[in-house]
Image 1: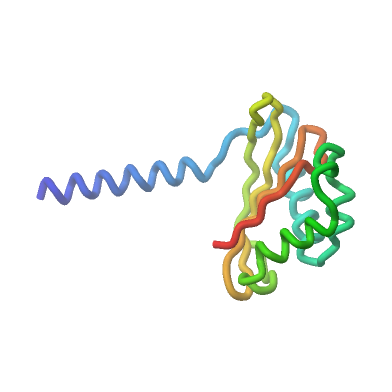
Image 2: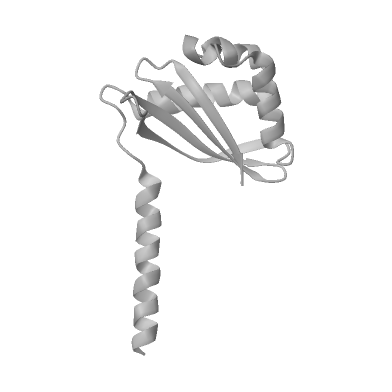
Length: 139
């Protein structure tokens, strides 16, 4: 009986840790969750429409130096090639982050259903709401 109670307690603790991790860090001062998510959805829509130039045009200058519309297309295609076509957004959140340099930024995270697999989109914005970068991961 004691073993079952310890196992249950350990399972509950693990669930609590996972749930706390899902909340994310607070957004940088002055940033609003609704705006971060709205802008992130706009970028996600452009990605799924294949408008690589529009995504590139939204990047801040330091990010533009290291990529191109063709690189964005290649990255997107390789990231979702086995996921199929976008169907719907299932959940979202906005979280604050900090670079090693100390610069704070916000990340819009979208959990989406595609025809074959689920995909997580992470779209990062600086405190001026300029696109810093993105990450797309198939689950």
